[in-house]
Image (tube, rainbow, N blue to C red; front, side, top):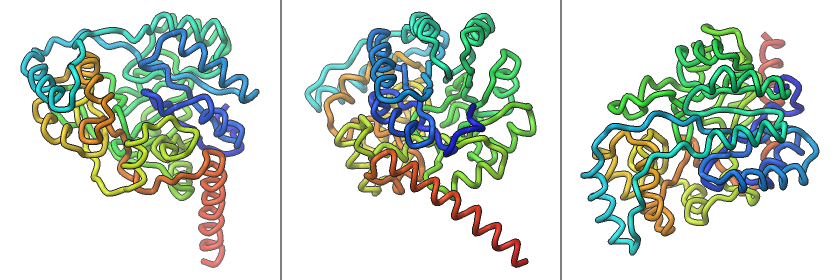
Length: 348
């Protein structure tokens, strides 16, 4: 279905509040495609978001689910002490560092019951039986991958489309496993490199994501074989996004560098550098979602220096335009890029 988009632009699922029904509907109505993020919300909240989105657009949209991993075995007691000390400084209390599965099974049943037309998965692979059930309901299955090996595994379980995430992407890396050692949890490929490697490994349609902000970026990944480009950070400044005020301000200011860190969640993610990231990244264990729950009350204080300010490497190009205008502008830039290249080679 992504081959037929009027505009080959997809609004990424951004868990934590940034993805809203208004954002998804605006991008979809403008000719692109939008994903709702199911992560970190209840089944009831997800059902309401799907309902609201359906009321705002009659066009198809998708839902993204976090695949639960195994319970971490790392000793996080010393990190609990660090976060507790930080929490006291900002007038908060640390959360309970617990493992959960984000109500995965119930959310899967919900998207099945509601016949959501596109279901995407991040952090791992759905069971083969669940893939078959979703396909029987008419759903297209998208799996987020970061390496050729993950792409092969996704193809084997029956994925219809792959979302290839490059290391420039903001927020969590979509790696199936975290090695607990390297900053990104495993091999880091730039978006174009990851796209070329995956295209050379499997025969499936691919969506490219990671650091894509402009029409020229979209043209580049389409030329490399993608069927569409998924943008996340590009939409964080638009009025339809549920981006927290301090986060939005930091994005639009464009003054901070980005880095990969486990400090906020226990899983590698790219965000703007602040005090919490600097002080805690060297000590953060690979323990997701335990660390996520531990730091959640601290991040919720709204203090810029302790928030998880997720952003891709090119975040400084973000604007405050409405979502539909972003889609229209990117489309115009894409056509301008393609036409300029065509003219150049006609002259040659």
